[in-house]
Each structure stands twice: as C-alpha cells, then as structure tokens.
Image 1 (tube, rainbow, N blue to C red):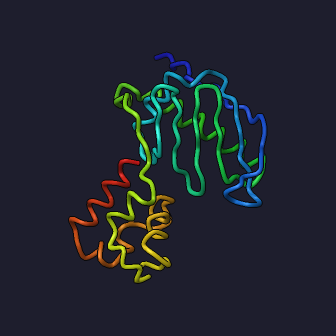
Image 2 (image 1 turned 135 degrees about the horizontal axis):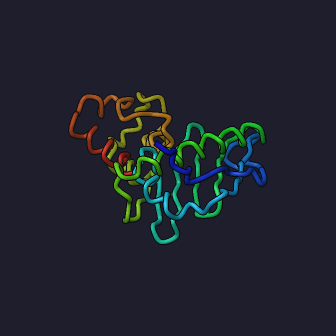
Image 3 (image 1 turned 30 degrees about the horizontal axis):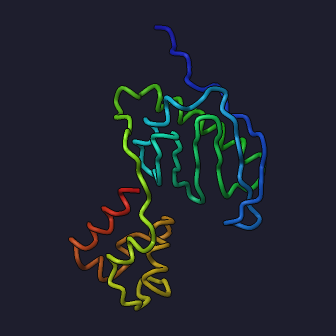
Length: 176
C-alpha cells in the first residue's frame, strides 16, 4: 500500500519576537509549506481550542505554557525559550497537522465560530466569596487561572462540593 502524501512538509521558522505576556520568552513565528485552509476546520475539533473563526480560518489553541495560533499562511507559538525550541515545536506541529489530516474522515470539521469564555463569564458562575480557599486572592483571579489552565474547578471547595455547579463551570471551560 502506498503511503499518502503528507498535507504539510514543514513550517519554517521565519522570526522570533519578544513575548509580552512572558518576559524573557519569545513568540516563534512560522510559515507553513502549504496553506492550512483545508486542515484548520478539522484542527478546530480537537481539545484545547480557545477560539476559532471559520471565516478567516484563524484558530487558537491552548498550550502549556502559552498559545498556538494557526492562520492559513502563518503559525505563532507563544512563550518559547529560544529559536531552537521554536523550531522543535513547529516540527511537532507539522506532525500534528499531518496526523489530523490523515484522520480527518474520523473528525467533524467545525463550521461555527468558537470563543473562549472570558474571566467575567466564569466569575459570574463562581461563588464570588473571595475566601481564598482555592489559593487565589479572589474569585476573579480564580476565573483567570481557570481559563489559563492553571486551576481546575475542583480547586474551589464550594465547586468541589456541588456537582451541578462544578459541571456548569466545566461546561463553560469546555466551550473553549
């Protein structure tokens, strides 16, 4: 059986710029060897999606630490230590893109826009007691930590004790 031609051969690192969200870190910017228009809707069906715009085909994924943004002709990865790490991450992304494309018949291409919950979306569903039992200074700080993946709903004692409440928060986060 002949091997299928990969969707993407490479993502070339074209520059690094300072990452304002993480001083001392960089943003690795890459250019894919093929436009990503066709594969991005399938990538949008995977976990860790923060936002997806089907019109512009822009997709943002959560990565620990930082984010990956894919556009048809450009890729950005935040919070990278140096150019070598940026190149490594771009190589790994090529493998992920090709694996997604190869298995696209098992995935549902996303057609609708997706937006990550904002801190106030989550805060309005939290106890808003600011007890600090979760390890954060306030419920708003906890909401931000939830969005950034630094905390889970189970880290909040009232949410841990109330199954329905915790599921509502997890549902909001699952939409991201």
